[in-house]
Length: 507
RNA sequence: GGUCCCAUCGUCUAGUGGUUAGGACACCGGCCUCUCACGUCGGGAACGCGGGUUCGACUCCCGCUGGGAUCACCA
Image (cartoon, rainbow, N blue to C red; front, top):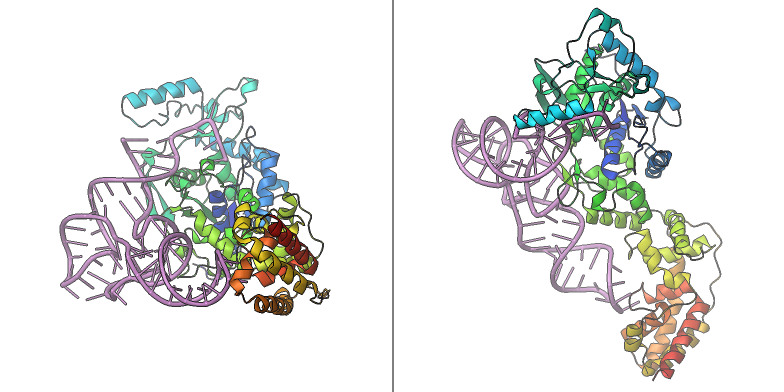
């Protein structure tokens, strides 16, 4: 070991743009990202779009937007065209030709039907279903000199197979799983070039990982069976394979690999459900990795502490409730101005007008953030703040808006009406501003309540619930003084009077 | 079926030969209280089984069982 020759860590995330960005998948990307950042190395984003049939630009956009939303940034990658596999076909052809020339790969003209029959036959005879290598040894001088590659439309209807070694073992020294030995006899000759002239995944990946100088391959352990094959291709190319770190899978509640059928699984889905990127990231990082008893991690902490040594080896089940709890945690602790911005699109989506006054919105959110676990929930809850007309729940009205309460509500309306209107503070929102401002207002509201309570000899509990129903339409809300402070004097008086007349008239 | 991986509360996990097996989510109670929450205090809940190794195994080894992944001209 040459201590002066420190190799910079380079990791990559290589999603294929064939669908939504899945959270199990993005977790692998996150771990690759954290490892690179922890080691002050480079994180590369590569787009595995060799499958031209299934790749879409919408899907690519979703990947890029999802990563942007999560704040997982890359040092190399899109929009740089070199990081798209579809732009590297010349390189793959060159690599395939090299192997062909050296007899490390060969042309195979077995048809799909041949292969199918082969598999069926093997199954009948209880042998393993792999390719039997019948075209493996056609290495004539002419064959080796042939520089053509498959092109079905040009009549070159064959594939190129990798000539995999048939003896020995391939050992994967995985950074997470430890040592796994694969008997080379288990490795059949995989196709590296399809008859339509397109390289296959295992081949393109190896060339990319080699060309881009990847030092560590971080991916899901569903790739573990591919690893010895990829390593053999590295060897055949005369290259040293990178280090591997295979993360355990993320399972659905049924214990099967997480997939679309488990419901919300894409990054977009959680964004639209009103989750914070901080929460999703925090949840994902703790699924398969831990740092003592710590549960809450800022991005800086994740980067600082991340280490494969602290990664678990066993698969984890995705637990939506813990994610919800984390989201709630961030709901309660994120700076209020962040919430003010984040909540706006959700208000708009409900078709409601977005209040122009951020300071007021901040006060509103301050009363709700301990009661809503997602932004969607928060906006649902904010209906009575954000709309002039409220719907009164009939059951609540029947119970609390009785004829006897009418004079009390009217009296309270008069008290509130006589309260000095608080002047609007124009200063920018400092942390805690909303709370302090609200407290000042609440004190006078409380005095107003006290006077009514005394006049009618009632307890607060007897008045608060009817008032709550009158102001919010239901029996559940933030503290009644807070609600009034946020609602403001005029709207409060109007709703109180409306309720008073409604319940005296309803008798 | 072959190959490979995995195994601590329901779930995520700490543990690295000697612990009353710790924390978190969820759940159940108490307190706080104008409702609901928040907060707070407390509670139930786990080392899959069988062999070894050892003075001593949740920890190390082997087997079993169970779960998962993978076996394409997909990635």
